[in-house]
Length: 131
Image 1 (cartoon, rainbow, N blue to C red):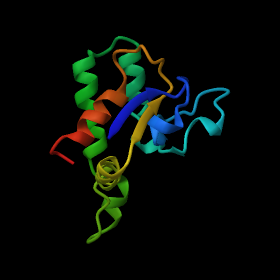
Image 2 (image 1 turned 180 degrees about the vertical axis):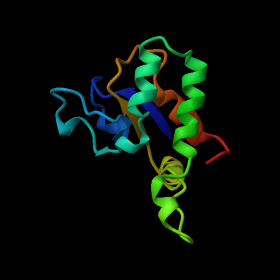
Image 3 (image 1 turned 90 degrees about the vertical axis):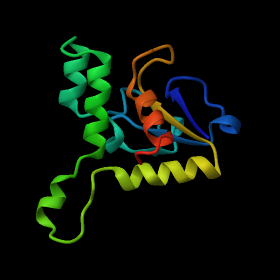
Image 4 (image 1 turned 60 degrees about the horizontal axis):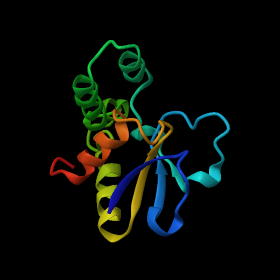
């Protein structure tokens, strides 16, 4: 099962399973014991995050742009004629499979009560048919 949680929320090793931090920045004072793996590539780009936080775009537009970032091909693809990276799709597929076999908690540095956080969009994307 794929869950979401703030990295600042209490750690529950029994329920959280594999704890994955999915933000570009770890956050000040964040101890590495609060997560099992840090995957900054699953966080929104700095530019996108700043636009949303400054009020330059709606949550719906931000969420769509974030998914587009996750699914677009990376700069490595321009240098490879045959082997493609395909953005973060293989990592998303891996998380989907892990979530079927064990508990996985996607985390961000946003507070637990934040209603608009990329971790919810990421959870929905992984659970959906696009990955």
